[in-house]
Image (cartoon, rainbow, N blue to C red; front, side, top):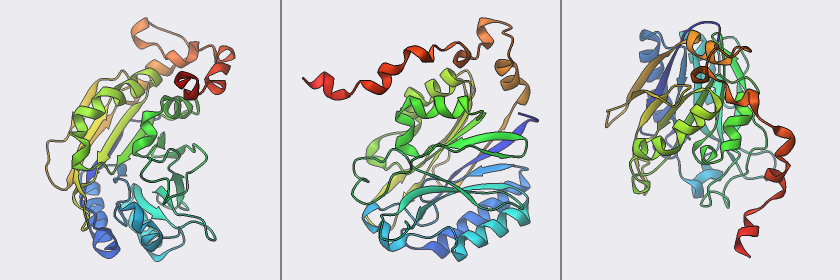
Length: 285
């Protein structure tokens, strides 16, 4: 990481199909973020279109849509990088993706597509098939969406590719439980094991259909320590300044102490073939 980086994690309400209304909320919060000197601003899963799997085909947008162009203009005008969740229309007759579009000033939009779909999403969405990393404002970062973070391999791949910050946008309903309490059970491990910063955020309020979302925003340090969390119950931004010195110390080639170890540097990948060969079916015999 070249310099300290200030990130923002958004809690917001997103109504299914009300793209204009959702866009205005995104643009307003981006303006608030600029005043706070935030460089990277992450919005929740499906923030642009609302989260409702069975409505995915109806509400999906292409990356060439007017909304993406307007978001790109917003990014350039404000001088910050936006990570915006959307339902992305698939090519041809394929099902849409749950995506996070990354918009940086002066750059073409890039995208991450959710790789691990939840079981309630499988009938409505196509899974992504790659783990891209992105660079902006002197740092390298990556995105995993909601269910992705239950798979430790996701964070390990990103860290090995050089990601220093992982973003975890969610659309977790109230019935799933307290987000912050649940996140701390496993997201801290993702950050600790892979020596990365991790920022999570969630939708809040109603989707205008049948779901209510619990909100939540959290920032975790590269040793699994909680740096900041939101106490908001409505829309807003959780901001945190991430230290370049801290993560660079951990990631330098020479080890200064066990406390500052970059664990992935000592892995034995030649022994991990079983990870690819074994399947949960073996446990069910």
